[in-house]
Image (tube, rainbow, N blue to C red; front, side, top):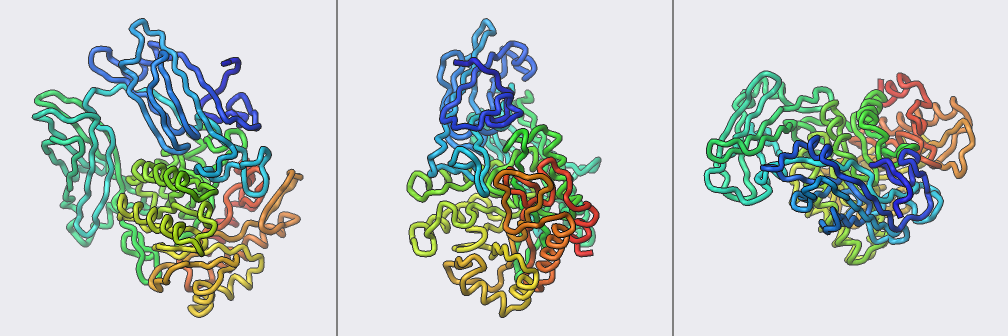
Length: 550
């Protein structure tokens, strides 16, 4: 045992891990020494601080020990978790951390997303991700510290709400001071007493009451303005904790068949993004790669990305916030429907929304895709109830964003009607979405895939979007199992097919957005606009002109 080394946070199936073994791994074990130098770098002071061990994500169940003391268990392959390890640290400074990760590759009741249940990837499924696949780090904090915070803006009220959670119950005479600033300009400051383990505060931004220039602070893809925030926690005269944060002032809504950003119609030019790399799989190869992915999507002319069947690294969302890219927040699906699957998906999805709800870049939530895990939703009241209830739970935690109950077809309680249509004929795409009557025929009948678009009554005021189409495969060198929804045999044919399909979707006066499949080649799924190494198959300026309809 422990006869091999691995580079974390890359999954053992990936080359970047140093192992690159893509066979089944139901159980993997990790061992690492935690030294005094590690604790010093984390800012640990033996007199005052607590040491928190953070895991970005471990797929799927993690059991953690430090110095043979059991710290705890976490279920969920995409959500973050942490342990206070202070009382388990050895006074001599020699500490051994053990992590056991369990992930049954044949268990289709847990959220798996695009991870293949077969040993070798096939069709649209990829190599599995086992164990640690997002960063692990230590953080030294005071006993009373800010554990979680979230922001919610209200444009008509010229205000922003802050929700704080603390590690322990605050003592008497504990106060929080909040300072908001845009660049060098102070915007607001407030101080209030905290007496519970959670606290809420609404701050008015007086600058925003001037209706003639309130838009100067708003966040959008062309002007991703971010407001800096500092939260200072004090007890008596002592500063206890200080946290830096940020938020974007913006609103998202739907009305009159249009998607609204800051109460103005915005046409969504979106791309389906698996965010999967050949060398590191679901994990990004480097922090720089996460920024570059956002930059590439914007350079291609898209204003939105639908991150498909995974919850993305928060560092990717940071760059989406800072560089101005709209994101559809999705999660990995299970493949089966049973009580265990319901509990697993609901628990993880709620955790992900809490983690990511303050990112201004996220504008839509997508808890289900193409009836994965709800395969018989058209006829099953139970599956319909699950779709509706998870959609409503999403709204209960975050009432500020539209929710798509089941992207592609068989909607139950969606705020946007979405359609997946991989027809290869541009003329068919043009005719199918050309008029109210032709679109209504799709919505009220059976969609392009032979699935009902809705299993409930339609709201004719809601936006309609084509959220998967295209999927043209083109490769220069043979790839085993190369797959796409259609095939181009040379570069000019690929460019013609892609351009004609995108232009066909853009001609519809009814659709309020599209999502092209897909950004990059991923394993044997070779229908990317970019190759797996992120080089373009079509000149970027040509793609950008097409996507931006110039």
